[in-house]
Image (cartoon, rainbow, N blue to C red; front, side, top):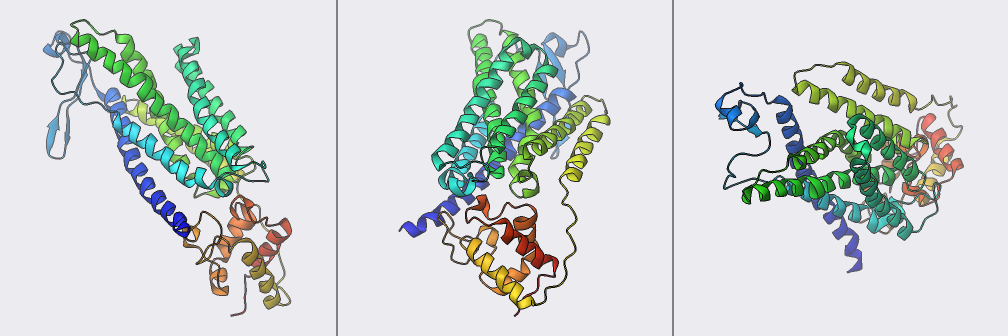
Length: 405
C-alpha cells in the first residue's frame, strides 16, 4: 500500500488547499469589511438619541434587497445583547488549514520542496526546524515590539515590522529554496495575524463582555489594543495574498535577490492597501497607488531577463535534440513522467510530462524558461542539472527547438 501514499497526500493537498482558500476568503473578507466599516461610519448629531446611547458612528447601507444600519459604540452598549457574534473561526480555520497545507506540501517532502543544495546543504529535519523556528520567532519579536514604547508610534512600528519581515526574507532565502523561503514569510505573517486575533483581539473583547456582565464599565484600553492589531492585520493581507500565489511565478522567488524582490512587492501591497483605507474615510490620495505601481514596475524592470545571444542553427538538429532528450530523461523525467519515480510525487507536477519527443517539443518554451532562465527546475536541483546542460537546453531553444519526429 506504500505506493498509494503519494496519491493520498496529493488528495490531501488538494482538499486542504481548497479549504484554505475558502476560509481565507472568509477571514480577509471580514477584515476588509470591518476596516471599511470603521472608516465609513459617520458620528451622530450631537445631542441625538444615538449620541446619548453612546454610539460613536453609524452607517446606512443597502445590499441584496435589504437595508442595513450598523452602529459602533464608543465602548459598549448600556445593555449586553442576548446574541453576540464573534469573528474568530474565520481566522483560526485559515491558519489551521494553512499549517496543514504547509505540512503536507513542504514538510512531508522537505528535500524536494525546501532544500536547495546550491543555497544550503540541509537535512530535511534542519529545513523543517528552520521553517518552524521562523514562524515562532516572528510572532515573539513582533508582539514584543508592539508592547514596547515603539508600539505607541504606528508609523515607526510599521517601518520596523516591515524591516523585520525583509530581514527574515533575507535570512530564509539564504537557508531554504526560494519557493520555501517565500511561503514561510507568508506563514510567518499569517501566524502573526492569527495570534493577534487569539492573543489580543478576542481576549480583549471577552474582558469587555465580562465587565458588562459584572455590571461595570468596560476598560476602553482593551478595544484600543484590539483595534491596533486589527489594523495591522488589514495591512498584512495584500502581502500575504501575493505570497500565496507566488509559487506560480519563479521569476520572483528564484531571483538572486529574491528577498529584495519580495520586500518591494510587499511594500507595494501596503501602499495600495493604505490608499483604499484612506478612500473609505473620504480621502483620495493618489500618490499611494502611484508609489505601489511604481515599485511593481521597478521590480519588473529589475528582474527582466537579458536578451539571449544569437545562436546559429545546429548543423545536425537530430543530434542536438538527442542530447537534449538525454538531459531531460536524466534530470527531469523522475518527476515529469506518466509514472514518476521521485518520492513524494504520485503524478507529474502540473500535468507536465516529458516521456515522448513530442511532449518535449511542445513544452520547449516552458523548459527554457524554468531550466535555463529562472533555473528553478529541476526543483531544488534534486537531479543535479549542470550549467553545461542548461546551456545545451538554451542553445537548442534558441536554434528553434527542433526535433526528429
